[in-house]
Image (cartoon, rainbow, N blue to C red):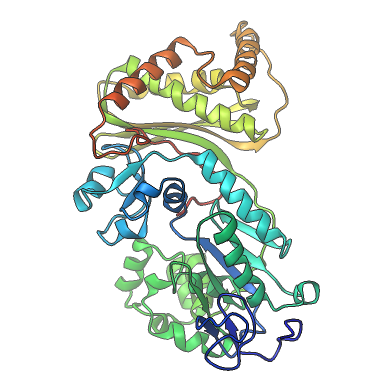
Length: 457
């Protein structure tokens, strides 16, 4: 069968991407078919890995493949990801771990390995690049693709290319992805959520308005709970209710987001797939196993997140002029403080010394459950410099760079500061006391490397 002339077909095999005219593929005998009258003309896709972190962990450990799995911290941490099995019990990302384990007490908790996930995500991204250079990443495990004009290069429609991409990822990486295909980014993103996991959904121009009409406003991507409540208070509950409002009225009531929503309600989205994404910040945070008020213990934890931020920024060859310090109290109040520096920095020592007085000001006996540090205002590093008020700054910078080289060559624990050694011993002691139902890879603290890309799983 000639796959180079599939333009008029409305039905494709989900297993081999061949055009199909009946109910069974004549090439591979599969009955898994994708049917849509506009399938040959649509070229904007959203590809989303299914429960990516958990899928990678299950791939690497067959013993937990059929069990509910949560990737995240210990009892006081938060859920980074939950597999579909765990989601049946109501577990979801960003949920406090103690709540997740109440809902799903038999879950296996695994500490996240961001380096591994990034490595696998890069493999998937390279497979996407084999199809088109127009890729806009949203996070480590999802991206928009514009496959306009690729049929002449690949001899197959975008839909066929995407079916083969799904199979290639499953074979080479060992995880599944769901695909949404449409004529704009909003509808492609919407479609990718309709048939999870390992799904392929299509929304065409002819059906878009009717498809959206009766959906609640919260169904629209980007409309969160707070905005939903504002809309509902104004008597706007469905997408059709939005259409009954004029653009002017939506803008006056809800600002730019109101105008944007009015256009999405009409299935209008003229944003291009942008292949470049600018990172805005690099940061790390950790949630404590128990609330902490002791200032010296908080300093140790601050050093830990500053070093993680520095390690990440060095790996990305970035520095920042703005240092951000974050605390969360036992009552879940978030405290954020920022300091702008005269030149870009990436050293853990500088980040720590910038955050330290901010910590000392806030640590007045209150108990805290989380601490974080980060840099923004990013640019390439310009080299370390001294400070007239701190003549030893350059010397400490030289020592830190030398330590980095030793850690890169011999392992992260090869050379430690006093604080680092103390924290390593604490981790060893905690690991020895973990409950038996927690997987050996679990840990009570969570950390995150945040950027302009929204982390999602």
